[in-house]
Length: 194
Image (tube, rainbow, N blue to C red):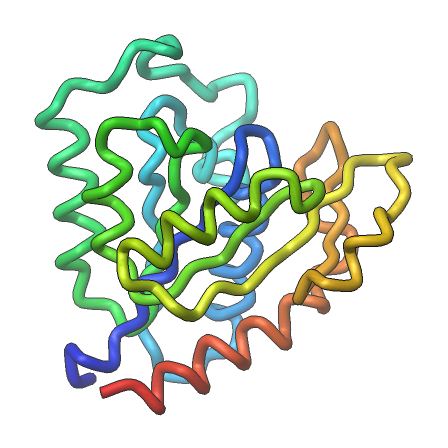
């Protein structure tokens, strides 16, 4: 596929908002379509390995914290993560961002994206994330509200493109079919790029 038509989707939002769960579910949704498109998933929050347990590649008990927060990862690790995302030849590349806009590598991470998905429990941090995406030249930003067990849907949720519910313990989407519309939009945008 033409490199101008590659989608680099950055998934951002505050810590513990369901970014990794939604990123992994979206990845699975796109792969399961068997559309002939190459799809890849990058964990740009290099502090822990969340995607492997979510994809069933290892048990949650084997998940490791690589660097304790707030300590930053070594520069060569972050540079490798950024370059791996930026130069991945897949048609659609999903990057799961760190949950802090104050991360010193955030400007480089954001400049690597073409599209963005904000994930949060409400709109409290949305303006800051939207401004960061816009500064990086990313105009297409989808919004997803993430609810934990027992949490009621906030009134502002109607303004989100997706409402999904993450269960506390097993980190699975309760209604993964709601990702179909987002996946359709991403594929459609890819064909209208360039």
